[in-house]
Amino acid sequence: MRICMIGSGYVGLVTGACFAEMGNDIICVDENSDKISLLQRGEIPIYEPGLKEIIARNAEEGRIRFTTDLKEGVGRSLLCFICVGTPQDKNGSADLTYVLNVASQLGDILDEYRIIVDKSTVPMGTAEKVRDTIKKRLDARGLKHLEFDVISNPEFLKEGNAVQDFMRPDRVIVGTDNVRTAEILKELYSPFVRTTNNPVIVMDIRSAELTKYASNCFLAAKVTFMNELAILCDRLGANIDLVREGMGTDERIGQRFLLAGPGFGGSCFPKDVQALISTARDCGHTLEICEATWKANQRQKQYVAAKIMDCFKGEDLEKITVAVWGLTFKPKTDDVRESPAIDIINTLLDHGMKVVAYDPKGMDNAREIFGNRILYTYDAYEALKGADCLAIVTEWNQFKSPDLPRMMSLLKRQVVVDGRNILNSVEMRMMGFNYHGVGRE
Image (cartoon, rainbow, N blue to C red; front, side):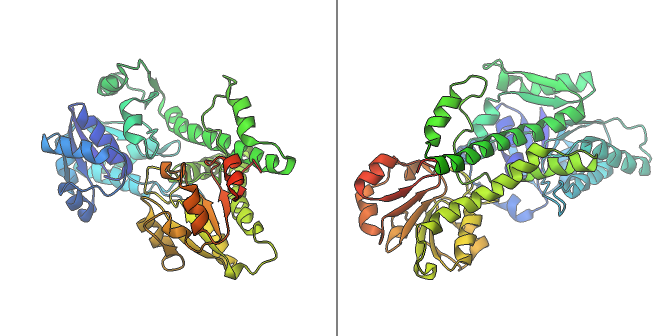
């Protein structure tokens, strides 16, 4: 199929590349000419394992290309995927400015039938707004009777595992009231679900839009519940790892998203929780679990920062240096948006502590946030030299089996706050480290 990806950010690139990998003809459009030039040179503006290789292969074979010309992209494509950003507005709702701007441009371009696909994460009723915006522009052009369809096809990609998620999806959600359009989307996604027998679920548009938010908010609540239990474990002397094992073996609960840590971050969970809360308020309803999830997650970030400072209670914190391993909100990405590391580091800085940080992929993005307020190293162990404490904030694999004798020799004081519980607490304490986990003191 001929497909136009409107927006060449994270979702647009992953979606376009994976569709191209299955033989489709993809044209990725973005108004940012610098980004398009970068992509045309074979460079990728984001870090996502496997993505660069897929794009390079399909670009060489002519199945994917990049342009700033929206009219060209739409003119040669049956399917037009809207993959632009929906940033958080001041009141917490999703800002649809970019989505509706695209809709206006489509209304000025369309001259024959097209399927417009909302791939961006958008609140309920957005497809109707997109449809109305396009129709208004078509009417102004004297094309009142031109047919087009607007459908919802939310993405469920995890940063760091997005290519695998798209190639082998748990499910594909298609929101449409048009049987013909539903069949076209089923055909498009059939290569991705054929081997797994996972479903392509067709539903009404509003239910599809809500499903995305509902999924992310439920997972955010699950993560936050475990973080709340971890605090309780610290107070009662229980071990969150054992509690997690006992819970996770219950098939009704499952083992995923039960790891305690410093709170959730990234481009999805924080924004989507806030957006769903705002949507509920707009229709006179209160989502109490979602509101509690948001509040508890903010507290969790401060809890880890407090753990670090408590290790030096009674001391002059301005004389304390903390080495931070991990700046991204999760491993296998360079994304620091809403990362717990940001809140934790800012809290330490506010109390006068010095911070030396290392991350395998997130250094440049973190530098845009912190500037010269912290020091940066491009080696994990270099960050430990003369530091009073090591704080592990992101669970990169290279942090899971570190050289403990080397750590012991480099740290001024052998204090370790393991915000991800990735180290062996018994081994650490036997080695002589003053070790603190989350929920397993």
